[in-house]
Length: 150
Image (tube, rainbow, N blue to C red; front, top):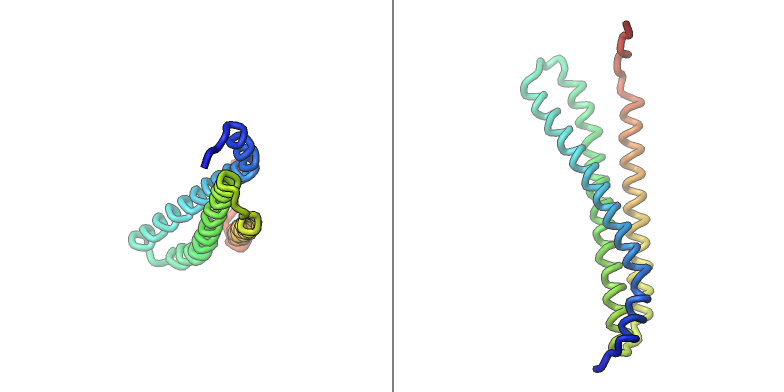
C-alpha cells in the first residue's frame, strides 16, 4: 500500500464537508448540554425548596418540577441522537479515507452512514424543538402575578 501526497490531498478534499457537519453537530451538542445543565440546576433548586419552604408553596414548586422532568428527558434524547450523528459522520470520514486509500468500494456504506447521520440530526432537532415548546408552554400556563411598577 503506497499512498502519494496527491492521493492524501484528494482524500482530505472528500472529507471536508463531513468535517464541517461534525463541527455543527459539536456546536449543537454544546447547546443541548447547556440546556440540560440549566434544567438540572433548576430542578435541584426546586427540590431543595420543597424540603425547606412552607408546604403551602409545594403545589407551585411541584408544578414546575413536573414540567422540568419531561424537558430533561427530551434534551437527553436530543443529546443521544446528536452523539449518534457525530459517530456516524466520523464513520463517513473514516470510510472515505479507507475506501480511497485502500481502493475499496465503500460508497454504499458511506451513503448509508451519511443518511443515518442526517436522520439522527433531524431527530435531535425535533427533540430540541419539542423541549422548547414544552418550556414556552409552561411559561404561558403558569400564572405569575404581574410586578407592580412604582
